[in-house]
Length: 260
Image (cartoon, rainbow, N blue to C red; front, side):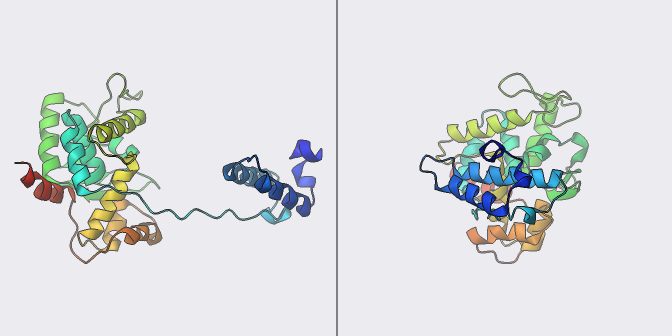
């Protein structure tokens, strides 16, 4: 923009800025809509750096795309668990889905955070520097005990290895390793959807609501600051009203019987 007008954008008349942004959207050989948005974001940053309000250039508002979360079925969760050849990977899928964890949260699980007796997992200083507790499935507890006895982790439940999993400087399972494992397992399970780590978290919240857990409890289990964030899952399910539990138990109850 500075090259186009041969001056700083902050020196422009708001109408010049409006015309320039209009041209970006109208060009037949796009800069895409994303390019348009980033131009507006760049101008916002410039104004902020100069201590000027957004109104100085009459910048347009950027509407957020309203997208519903993509989830997978209980049968697909079961297929992923069955397709994982390593116990480590079975537990990884089980924890991401069965506890609704973010990628960072599953990587940060320390042995001292697991309360087998109370069937709870303590999630420490997660997003927004908040702690929370989530229910642990009895199937996860059994698997975790077996995994700890065989793998002897020292601090973190999941410690990285070599490629393609990798590990961080402190020995934790790397973010890339977690993402690779989820995508590979989903592909091996024959799932057509582009499954990612956060999709398992979306599925956790949706299945809880479908199982009758009230939305306030789901908000707390997910660690959401605002109930509006949790309410998006109401668009993909119809919740009754029951007590909280780990939805992984129901996967084993419904799907496990059929494979015996």
